[in-house]
Length: 324
Image 1 (tube, rainbow, N blue to C red):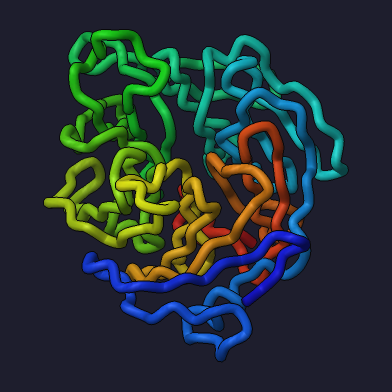
Image 2: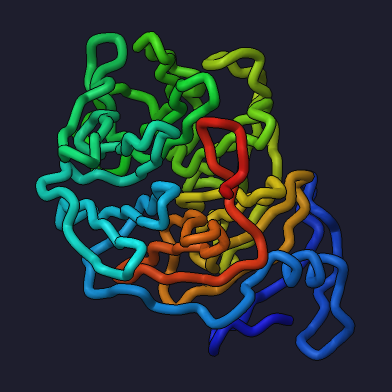
């Protein structure tokens, strides 16, 4: 097993019945399994570092490709900026409970506002522009997280967290905002859809519902048009719990998924093989790759931001290329 500072990187593998690898548990000190080796090849490559703390609830880390990291503090309604030189500043106040963030190749900051809108920030201004705040004439529930495709479209989740009651949209959905401004509901039957990713080839959309045991995969027939979803992988829960608490997620240059849960950042291969858990001092909510060379896994975890040195780079969305 790997050790990251005092935080164990767990690799506990078992049969899931949903496409994940069936491997017996290898206890600490026994011969490493193939999955142990796979996780070791990814990281961590060193101790986990607490970069900043004393927040209310941090989320939505996003790297701008220049070594700067943006992340949100939802209850305090702020977007923070961690500069490449380590200076931490407040980028925006009154963020309307912004959650997930992602940069476009042009350097615009996309943001999911839980007050019911998908917006775009020009960070040089800074100025904010609403991209969409309604579907079928009604506001969204509470936009949560997003992923950008190479066509310039945006998939985003809209669960019930922080939403008015009754839910404005009546269902908890996944939407696609096309480059021409057309918005389509592409999924309408998931329990709290939360984290969302595209495969590297953009042929598959991954959705991690919080109130379920795993990640679902949808074939993409065309931008904004999905086929039937399937169980991609089952994640691991603490004790006898029947949900894992999936939250945000990111992807590395090899197409491995990193999904934040109550156990830590669970890592899954592109084939749905469960590789293990990177444990953090606080329960993580979201993660992304960044840093000067794209090999730092930044993890927002409750009151703090952590940095995990990795042996792989992150995948950058919007241009279908890995971080470089």
